[in-house]
Image (cartoon, rainbow, N blue to C red; front, side, top):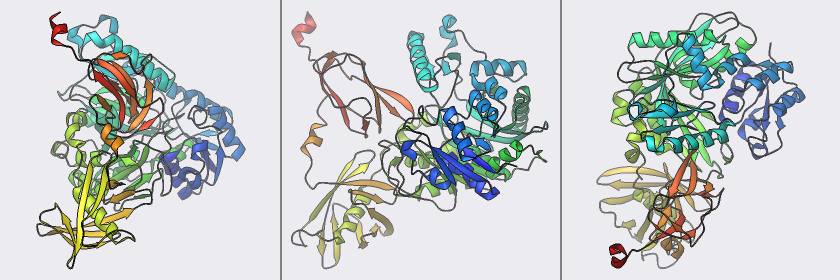
Amino acid sequence: MIESILVANRGEIACRVFRTCREAGIATVAVHADPDAGALHVRSADTAVRLPGTTAAETYLRGDLVVRAALTAGADAVHPGYGFLSENAGFARAVTDAGLVWIGPPAEAIEAMASKTRAKRVMAAAGVPRLAPLDPAGLTASDLPVLIKAAAGGGGRGMRVVRDLAVLEEELVSARAEAAAAFADGEVFVEPYVEGARHVEVQVLADTHGTVWTLGTRDCSLQRRHQKVVEEAPAPDLPDAVRAALASAAEAAARAIGYVGAGTVEFLLPGDGRGPYFLEMNTRLQVEHPVTEAVYGVDLVALQIRVAEGERLGPLPKPYGHAVEARLAAEGSLDRPVRRLRTTGVRLDAGYAEGDTVPSQYDPLLAKVIAWAPTRPEAIRKLAHALEHATVHGPHTNRDLLVRALRHPEFLAAAPDTGFLERHLTALTRPRDARLAALAAALAGAHRPGAWRNVPSQPQTKRYRSEPDGAEYEIRYHRTRGGLVPEGFPGVRVVSAAPGRVALETDGVTRAFEVTAYADGRVHVDSYALTALPRLPDPAARAAAEPGSLLAPMPGTVVRVADGIAIGEPVKAGQPLLWLEAMKMEHRVTAPVDGILTALHVTQGRQVETGETLAVVTETVVTETEEKS
C-alpha cells in the first residue's frame, strides 16, 4: 500500500493528484521552484521540498533533484503528472532504482513511444494503421501539403505545415531549432498533411495482470496552432465501426509495448472516410482526462494508484452522457495576481487561487472548466454559460475565444476538424464592444469620494481602455434631480448605480452589471476587463500610432530580436525583425515595407500587450526620377 506520494509537477495537475490522495488517505509531497514557493500546489500538499532555481531546466526537469526530494521527504511513490518528466524513461528508471513506486508505465514502454518516428515503426509492426513518412529530399509538388513534426515532445512545438516546396528547407531548419530548444532533440520528420481531419484519441488503462481497458473516445480537434483548446467525450458523429476500429487499434498499441497504467493513443481521422491513422501515444495522464472521468464515472488518478499497487482492474464501466472541457489560459503579461477565479455548476480543476500570481516561466494554464450533461448540446450550453459568467479577475485570458467557439453554429452542429479555429479565428477573436461596460464602470465610480470634483450638475468625463484589445472609451455623464444621466447613449437609462452594481435599461430591457474596481486602476465589469485612464489622453500614446509602427498583434513575450538590426539601418519588406512567444508558439514580426528602422522599443525577454509599439519602420520613398532610372 502506498502511504505517501510526491508529485513531480506543479500547477493544476499537482493539485488534481493531491485531491485524489486526500480522498484516499495518502500523504502528499510537493516540489517547487523558487517562483512557486507560495503556489497553490505547495499549499495543497502536506509537505514541500524546494528545488533551488527559477527555470524548469534548473528545477522541475532535474530528475536527480526530484528523486532526492522524494527520499528526503519520506515519500514511497512518485506521480509525474503531465509535461516535464512524465514521459522521460530515464526518470522512471531513476525512481524505481531508488526503491520508489513509479505511478506510470514501464520505462521500456515510455522509451518505445518517446520518439514519434520510432513509435510509428512499432505501431506498423503491431498492425496499427499510420501515415507513411516522407523523405524530404524526394518531395515533389504532388506530395504537398506536408507536415513537419518534431520527433520528441508535442504541444505544437517544432511543427510546420508546408504548402510550397520553395520554403521547405527554411521550415525544416526552423522546426529543428524550435524542437531542439523545446525538447533538447532537434529530430523532425515529414508526413502527408491531411486537410479537414479530426483529432480523436482513446483513453487506455492497463494493469499488471494483462487487462487493458479502452475507455471510449475523446475529440480534441478544437486546436489553435496545433494546441488543444476544447476537448469532449465521447467523440461525436462517429459510426460504430469507426469506434470499434479505434478501440481495437488502441488496445493493440498498448499490448504491443507492454503498457501499464493510464495512457492515450491519438489518431488522425480524415473526413473522407480513410483511417483512422495512428499519430502518437502519450504515456501519461492527459490534460483532458476529466471528460473521460465524467462520462465513465471513474477517478483515473485513483485507478493509476491502484494499478501501481498491483491491483487488478475489474469490469469495464459503462459510459453515460457527454462531457466538454475548456482550457482557460492566461495570456499576455503573466506576472499579475489572480484576484478572483470562480465558477458555478461545473467542475473547476485550477492550479491557482485568489491572490496567486501566474509566473511567466511556466505553462499559462489557469484552470480546466468541465461540464457534463446527458447530451452533447446540453453539455456545450452548460460550459459556455459557466465560462461566460465565471468571475476571472487578474491576467488576460482566452475566455472570449472559448465562449465564442463553443457557441459557433459549426461547432454546435457537428464535431469540427482541426482547422476550425484558424478558419474562424477573425470572428472568434474580434474585440467586443465594451461601451456599456465602460459606462457601468464610470457610473459605479460616481459615488466614490472625490468623484465630483466640480459642480455636480456639470458633465463628468472618464476614460477606459478595454483589455486586451486596447480599445479606448470616453464616458460622459452628469447628475440631475432624477439621477445620473449618460451622454451619447440614446435609449439607455440608469436604473440604479452603486459602487459594486449598476443597472442599465436599454430600449426597455434592464441589465445588471457587477463592477469591481481595484486600486491599480483595473476595473472588472462582468466578463469585461478595463483600465481607468487619465482624463486627458497621453501624448506618448498618440505617438505610438505613427506611420510604420509595428504593433504587437497579441499579448506575449519577445523571445528574440533579429541579429544585426539596428536603428538607422535599412530593412526590406517581409524581413523578420523580432519574434514574439504567445500561446507557447513563436510569431514573427516582419517589416511592413522597405525602409529604415527608426525605432526599436523592445528587447529580448520583454513582455508586451496587444497594440504596444514594438518598432517603427519609416518607408523609403522612391521618387518618380528614381523609378524611371
